[in-house]
Length: 385
Image (cartoon, rainbow, N blue to C red; front, side, top):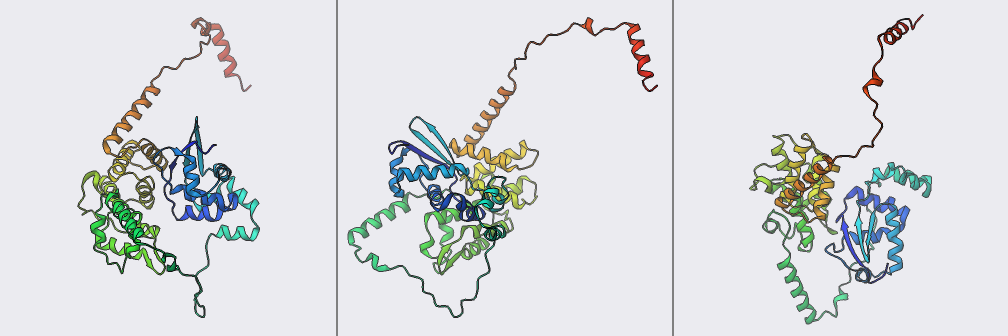
């Protein structure tokens, strides 16, 4: 690789609890902190188009040698797949195995046993941290953010900050059908601090609402309970866990393919409640693959028709990956893509296959005389004597 080679990132854009836990505890043992850190940074990098590799190296403040060495480690454990065309590199980020899947993997599970001590493996196998202890008698000695770091803040920087903030607020349209701006106005800053109202957090809340049809009063409680004040943080996984266990509200103001995905699935399944696995599936299609709600719903409907009213995750994820790769973001594009794929499959299926010209014997070789037949029959009937 050279610094002026071009690169593009594709694949996953976020991680969930069990996968992140596996990355932090299990993958780290095999590839090291630096490779894990690089992988986490790549997940949240720009995935728009090809750029010079030196831009990425400078933004991460790493050398080309460091990059190549750790990319190879990530490739070896299937966290990255690398493709090359002339001077262009395509890095496809793969989803880590979930914690238990990693431990049960034929190769990775053995490598972990080889790497760590028996006592530490027992801890990893258990996979659970001890309960918190009471802090009675303890005094907090952690360092706080020193606001003196802004002591040289100038009027010019304040103007720049205001301009950039306004541009982001103006240009950043949320990719969700849910009215997230109107919804957040109903939540007080004391319950959900303004410092947590970042574009990413609000978009994820909106996508969660797109995925699960939940009454707004109940959803508001879930959002508030997923925010902590001390320390200030927002836990998306906690919000999604609340949503998975909530009742589906069919009285949403959206109709047809614009309905929240769980409500749409309940509707086309004629009132059959989606299972937990079905909810996790549609959640991944909406949150991780970032498919628009109407496209997710169209895909669910298509899969149920094609697969005898069953949802097979690998089948759906394969189509979703192709949708992302081909910028399928509307129902019209999805229909065109699937029709074209089906036509291509049918053409391949109907191709005449050349069969080797084997020697074909004439019918005369298959005919026997009456005498030969009677002799064979007599021998068959007396075979036990």
